[in-house]
Image 1 (cartoon, rainbow, N blue to C red):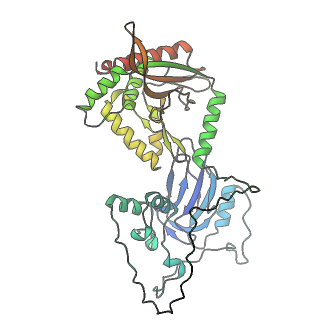
Image 2: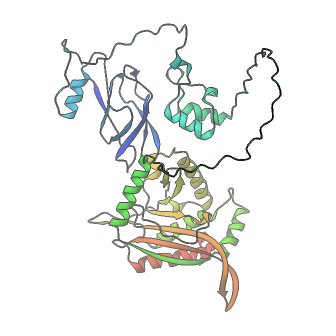
Image 3: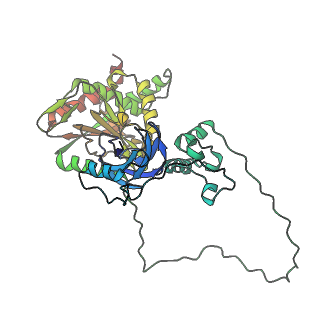
Amino acid sequence: MAEVIRMPRMSDTMEEGNIIGWLKKEGDHVEPGQTLAEVETDKATMELDAFVEGVILHIAVKEGPVPIDGVIAVIGQVGEDWQAVLAAANGGAAAPAAANGQPSTPVAAPVAEAPAAAASTEDSRVKASPLAKSIAKETGVSLAQVTGSGDQGRIVKKDVEAFLEGKGAAPAVVTPTPAATPTPTPAPTAKAEAPTSAPFAFNSGGNNYEEVGVSQMRKVIARRLGESLFTAPHFYLTIEINMDRAIEMRKQLNEVSPVKLSFNDLVVKAVAASLTKHPAINSSWLGDKIRYNKDINIGVAVAVEDGLLVPVIRYANMKTMSQINTEVKALAGKAKERKLQPDEMQGNTFTISNLGMFGIDEFTAIINPPDACILAVGGIFEKPIVKNGEIVVGNTMKVTLSCDHRVVDGATGAQFLQSFKEIMEEPIKLLV
């Protein structure tokens, strides 16, 4: 019996998937585990694998967005009436069939390939999946240097990744220049002076803009953060922290740490320690109830080309700063390469957004559902401060806590920030 293939849910926030391209075509035989198509979700570009064996009888959507559970293909045996199966799956009438009772567009049985005496124009081109082409373009790899492992030598994502891991580079091919035919020497002419710069051109009557389609990631960011801002009543608490001790401790830790620790690692660890004292901050609004999370899973916002991804550091309160550093770097790298898996972006109970490395003094962040709070971290700046009754130069950092007032009250948020400030100003408390 033919199977209807539907768009699966590839992440917890996914509502539709955008088919970038198919790696198989109608009439191809597929087995479970083989990649059928490449699908862009709200968080990554992922491969859609077959889960049944058979022949692709029909591809319903060759490119474009498909909602969750939307029909994308039918897989079965040669000669099966896929139109009837599709109609039954959709609860409608079967599509018109030919006079012999077979589907109006049957899939022909596969035939043995004839020896390739001469490659066609299509075969002479480099065959590669859309995702492989995208990765090659981003990394500057020439697909002509990559050996394909797919059907008929097609280059897929893993082939480009394997090439990058090997750091291989084919030698440049030098094409010999044929001997030029002697031509009469033209009479000398006056040498024209080349213009020193291109002439300025101004389009006064045209439309001076460019429109770009919205990616699946940007759609979800717009929808979820719009819902968060206009559904959850936000309020904001800002506090300034003296970072002198934190700077000293970071220098000392980096003398013995197996990895070079960043201030962000210290922030993540301090947040995790503070959340253990204030479980109301580590909570979620569920409409008719509030969930107080026992595990402390901190999402760390990472900027990527199309928007923002939030990989999650699980059980952050139980990890050392060097472990946090290693995990954040690995997840951030995967996020920028769009290789994060859905389980690496789920389960957050609190989120940190750090823009300090961009020289931002302070800002407010929109709560990342299902969290009740998000901490916006600014940069560290030298400024005059009062210390022991004297004005001295100090290093300060501002952080702003965005709170969902349905879950967190002002005093609760303020107490959390007090604990966080105490740890950051005396970070040795993290060691006891």
